[in-house]
Length: 468
Image (cartoon, rainbow, N blue to C red):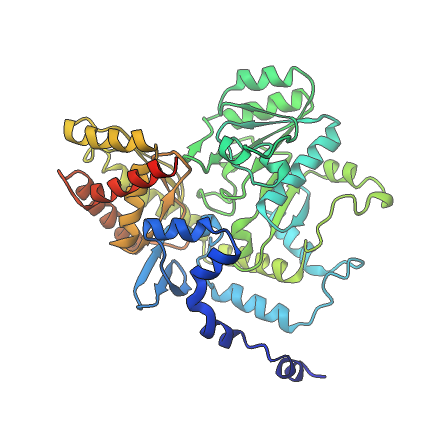
C-alpha cells in the first residue's frame, strides 16, 4: 500500500482537526492538562489566540503582529520556521532513512557531533538526548561514575532542569519542595571560591555544575571565577560541568558563554534549546574522551547510558541545519552586536526612571531590574506591591508590554523584580527600536501619579492575597 493510500484509508486530516477544534484550546488545557496554566493566562490577560509565527513575530486571530522577546525561553534561537531548518526536516522525512534501528551507526549523529565539537576543540565526544534536563542528568551521571564520588555542587538560585537529578542541583526551593529525597548536593553562592574549596576539601565531590549566566535574575559569574573554580576542582579530582542549555549557541555573543573567560575548558558541557531549531527536541552533553571511555569501558557497557529517541534523524537534521545557518548568517556576531545596542539603550534609561535600577547581561540575554523608588508617592505604591508579593511590579511591566504594545516578555523568576529578555538571535535594530519605545512608554506610565499600570497592580495585589 502506498503512503497516499494509507493516508486516505486512515481518515486523519490534521488541518481539518485544527479547523474544527482549535477554538477549544483553553478549555482543552483546563480539562486535560495543567489547569493552572489557562487560569494564569486569563488572570494576566495573556490568553491570546496566536494563529501563525515567523522569525521574531507572532500574528493573532485579528492579524495583529507581536514581537517575541522570549523565544520560547531560548528555544527559538533562529526565530520560528527558519526556511533552512524547515527544508532540512522535509528532506530528512522524504529520505525514508532507516532511523533508530538501535543496532547500526547512522551518519547524521556523527556529523552533528563533529560540527558541535568544532566549537569546543578541547572536548572530544557527544551524547545526544532529548532535552536540557536530560543533558544535565547525563553530565551528573558521568561525573559521579568517573570520579567515584556522590556529591555535586551547584550555585544558589541556579536552574538546571526539573527531573530528579537536575532538580537536585536546582537552587530554587519552590521547585524542590515536596520532591525529596534528592541526590547528595550542596549549594554555594556564585563567585564564592572559599565555599567551593571548603566543600571540595571534604573529598566527596564529583563535580560542580554552573551556568555562566544564571537565567534566574540574569547574573554573570564574576570575572575569573570559572577559571579559578576549574583549577580547584581539578586539584581535588572533581569535574567542571558548564550548563549552556540557555546561554549556548550564540546567545551571549560567543558560541558558548564560558568562552568569554580565557583558559576555561570544562570537562562536560550541556546544550539543548536552540539546537532544536524550534522543531525537534534535542539535548547534547559534550565531554572529554577519557570520561566517555571510562563510562563506556567495555562492550558489556555499550548501553549503560542511552536514550530511546536520542540521535533520531529529525533532531540531528535540525541541529545540523541550525549550525549551518548560524555560520552562514553570522548569527553569533549579530547577537553580540544587537545585544550591545539593546543593552546600551536600556542602560541609558536607568538615570531617567527611579523605578529602574539596573540593566545587565551579555549578548541577547539581558536582565532589567526594578527597585524601590525614592519619591514618596511611588514608594507607597511600591510598598503596596511588595507587601502583597515580591515580583508584582515586574509583572506589571510585562502585562502592558503585551496588551498595549504587543511585545511578549516575562519575569526571570518567581519573586524577582527582573524581566529577562532572550529574543531570537536574528533580531536587529528595528526590533530594538520597537522594544525600547514600548518600554519607555510603560515606564512613563509607571512614574505618573496614577496610571493604568497601578490600577492593574491593585488587581494583582488582590490575586496575590487571595492565593495565600
